[in-house]
Length: 109
Image (cartoon, rainbow, N blue to C red; front, side, top):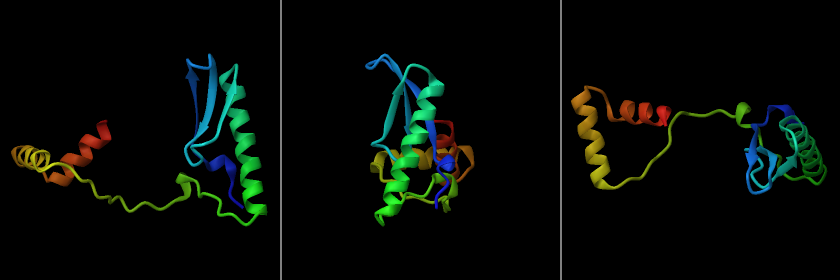
C-alpha cells in the first residue's frame, strides 16, 4: 500500500476562507481548512489516508506519490515560431544549447 506520508503536501493561507488550507498535489480535488497551519496539514494527511484506503478497498488505482515516480527529464513544449527563433538566437549568443537555456530558465522560474 502507498505510504501517504510520501505525497506532496503544502499549507497556504486562503484569504477567501480566512483560514489555512491543506492541499496535496497528487489529489488536486482535496483540501482541508483549519485555523492553524499544523491543523490544516494534519487534516489533509488524515483525509488522504481515508481516501487512499477507500480507493484501495474498492479496487481503484491509487495515485503514486510524485516522490516515488521516475521522471525521464524530457517533455515536449509547443511555442510560437517567433519564440522558438528568439530562444535559439539567445542560446547561440550565449554559446549554449537551446535545451540548456530553456532548462535554466525553467529552473529559475
